Length: 128
Image 1 (tube, helix red, strand yellow):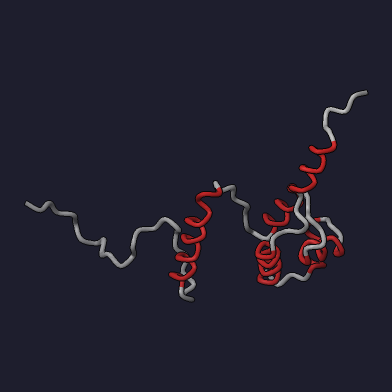
Image 2 (spheres, one colour; image 1 turned 90 degrees about the horizontal axis):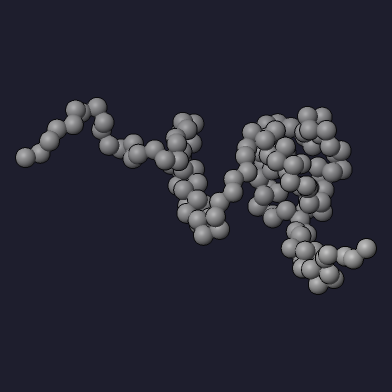
């Protein structure tokens, strides 16, 4: 049987594999777990992984499969988004602004909400 994938392609594919989840993602997962008051053992009982596996993911020693990562994120009441790379800075800026505007008031605000400082109780009127 002839192999369709040559050695150079195999090396290129391996080079694209992550050595670990990005630090920011690992910290976000760990923070979300702790925010819910869950230990790794609590999370394990809900997702069906071993504690060693969850620990490895949080420490960066294990790169989870996509379906495992998706399940982890969803059970922690988060979601993964696919954003075109060129728009990542814009999305990050929106998130920073959203978090900054919350200023501990405990009130959630949509990322796309209009400026709340405007008084919207007045009836609109036309200027002549």
